[in-house]
Length: 312
Image 1 (cartoon, one colour):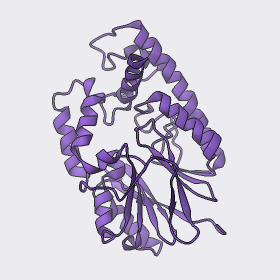
Image 2 (spheres, one colour):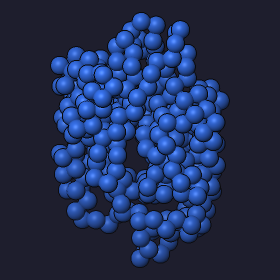
Image 3 (spheres, one colour):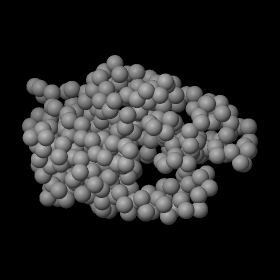
């Protein structure tokens, strides 16, 4: 590749938060992640017009993982491209694109076990109806190791980064090491103040792969994840910031692992604590956030450790 392909962030509103997608200005243009149902029309289309591009010309929709704030707008964006764009997702997260119900089942099997909310299932089901624009079959299933051609000499390599979800991936623009990781680099978490991942061992291995093999020169995050002092990174990190964020993510994961293991080894916790049955881990880590706020990364991660320890 003789020149760097321009990358443009596309911010879409969602309540008090912004949702981030990225436009790869290649001969066959791509959008990485799609926000929620309203994002393509309300966020992406005007942002693209502002830089002289058209949403109708997007030919690739690259999904980093299956959570609703990343795949919710996929069907709507696909429709706006005249159904010409290819929709790419890892096979492990494809059920979350195909079925709204899969999101409810994920909730019930994981964090929903601890939230003590009799309306939890109904709330998650209502959220999927509100923010997922449509169920759909992906055009391309990946597992990691594939190379996608975005026209001309622009190619994107797919790297499996399981941990946050089983099917999390990074898309790497070859030749310039522009890396899109979605939520696979959590640092200290986003606004909720805790990193969220379903498989702690896979999460660590994925971070090490990013650090040692991918070595991002430009790192694009799914949210403005935070440093230890609570200040957020932006979603566009340079090489030094990327290295720092990955290193901090590994350090945080190590601390959380130690606290979670000690908590699980100590047996039952206070039942009336909002962090039960993981009160000890919350106390050791100094976590005082509200664990009931969706997507409840505290319980998502703690359940990952509980599942892992049962399998040892």
